[in-house]
Image 1 (cartoon, one colour):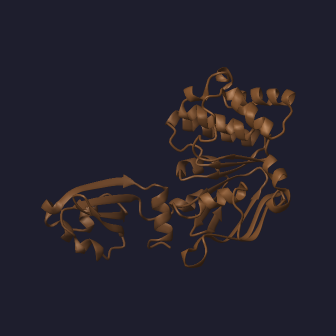
Image 2 (image 1 turned 120 degrees about the vertical axis):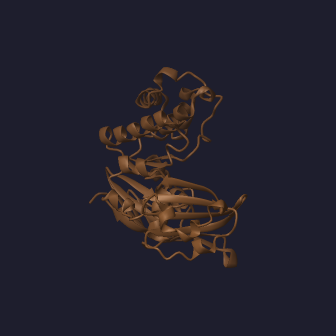
Length: 317
């Protein structure tokens, strides 16, 4: 087994004393060469902290972290040459420079020689389909083009591992397709290992050979069977807005319904349920006797956040 990432019993907290917030709580994780692994989790699960630890921005409080069998304490510069990291957003690009000038700047920071760098720049821009606009200012690029340029930037040091944090967030469908196709191409043609942090369930389904669920600072499920995430009897999310508080909703004992939350709403009260089907009125006949009090009922398909909530906070824990 050719391991490229090993995390053993990693702990990380912010602040100390009574204000301390433990974010990672005994994290264990391994990744083999050539994989595309996905890390899925709700907001606050520790994904951002995990990205920062793996990319060397933060250090763990305790535990052992090895990347290509090296540690940041002893061989930080060597590790970073083998890593390409793309974090959500395009803040690391210089808008008043061209794509070619951006890559030249970052390539020189890595100590790449000028002659070799020019070849690398053209090769990477061609790979991300930006070679025809290499002399255009980045400020003229679309959001999808900027994201592809960020990937080209991450590839400039010829890394062995690419860490991607929400790489398609905010992109239109066409741009999402281009970025996902590029990730698959890099994995197959360059044998590049990819660690993907995402909220997008369809993206994880399409790209990842193995999925990990990060919950409350720990990886609690690692599997190659991606169907386990959707393995739930609930398939619809129902949002009900009422003028008055419906105490009946909070006391429902029905295996076909799960109440996620009751909250105040600008028009009254909001109730969010997970249901086995669309006919929620049938399940709650008593609550719907006075329909004048019901302002609206919205029915939606479940998203990743909903599936994870059901698995780890609802009835199916």
